[in-house]
Image (cartoon, rainbow, N blue to C red; front, side, top):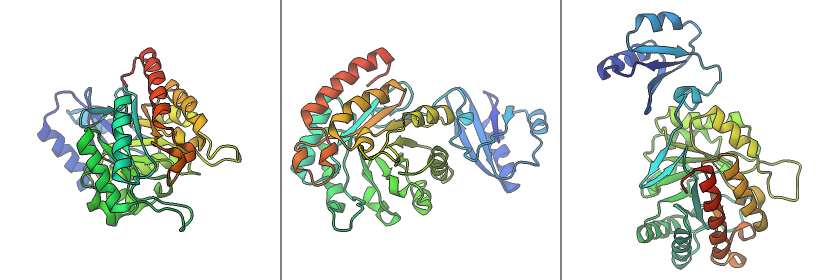
Length: 338
């Protein structure tokens, strides 16, 4: 259930309204938007008389019942305004097409600095780089770990690019203090203890859809983070596992469209992990822009043939520059800032 408040509602009355519901055993989420303020009521609201609340509470303009299980991330909470997340001078959300790029894994300081400077010059706004790598085989390269995060932070300091990297578990939280966006990978999408933990962090969270998870399950995982206190969640479609074997995964473009309809949160997509094939990344990136996504995450490497992981799906620096030029032309037609 969500209550939309009157535009001139006094803060003292809003606080009293929220406290009243919490004393009755409900959880509440206050959402302050540019057009209206909403109070989302979480709990068993079947016995709540919606009309009575609206007619007897002077700060409530109107109320709605949310039938979906996800409440705080539901578009009903931000009916006419989509959430835009600010990371430094970078905006991620409606009206923008934010490009995140960098290597699958941080391998060395020279490597990450070379890539960071190049992708920035091409127009990328956020630098990605894996320090902790969840791999299917325990014998595969597992990342440069804490040292890799330090190298990523040094690249951030030298280029000014905000950084995003994947966290694996709650014990690593202190290591991520200087990381601008904390990523929850596909394999951890339903790690509920981790979701609650990042819900207590100050940084935005980039949440990737699991390999075999439904759209609703992705939204419910986002709900865990927001309900735990962190409203800044970026949803990422990264391809799902289907019967197809010619690509690494199947990019679900319909999920991007549906997520934009169902939730107010920003939605991006990852064509690199979806395809697993370098030649497919650029065409899929253009398709992602065309269906209305808020951005892409693309793997880029200065020497893909020698990459320690995912080289086959990584663009080289020249290919990334070409892709950015194409995206900028298309973004102008879509009236989006890139």
